[in-house]
Length: 160
Length: 139
Image (cartoon, rainbow over the protein chains, first blue to last red):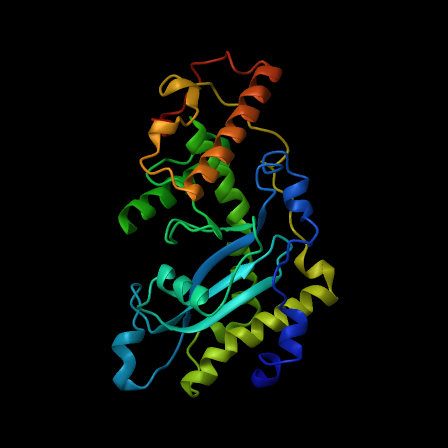
């Protein structure tokens, strides 16, 4: 089943790359804070560690910074919550920017003038929009979620 | 509060979608939580297959992916204005960016547009002039 789902025609039919003709998601369009500033934005990109059991000889390569054995997978999704690109199989020790470089080398590209939202672990390039480094989030606007964000901030500071 | 912070906040809000989709994927397919004992290349195909399957489910059953409304989405929460009490009205100036590559200029442009719209909003609702409600968190 895994083979069937991860190969053509099923995979090609349900995992489609974003194009410049795609309608803009209501999640962006209906939000006055995001529209029209993010009108060139097709979705978001992030890496995720998926547990893996490699042969003993390769274990050190696959051990990630969190301490478990994993593969680093790169996912891109659009704002309607559909995956549009997936790259798996990278060692857990590889960083997000390394996996991204490999995706570019394998021919991934965004339509001209469009980009994806990425976090600060990704490099600056024309396909990605990175947040400003070293700038705090504005905590007040998060209201009740503010306290949680303080913890996130502390976590981020320790982690970077 | 300045243009960079506002940009980062809205950027994080929009990027939230990918964190949520990871949550849905890992909740639905718990094989992703524990290492399966297969060949390496087969293990690498499992997430790919499950993402395709997730898209399939999403396409067939729209209710599955219903997005809860964001309580902070409707309007800017009113907070005191420490707007522009530092760096030139909060806008990002050209010389602030150490390297004016095309990509960084695009980001600066978006951040400044957002900031201008935010200032307009604050001026319209008359909240721009209130002060002294500042929370300790922002310091």
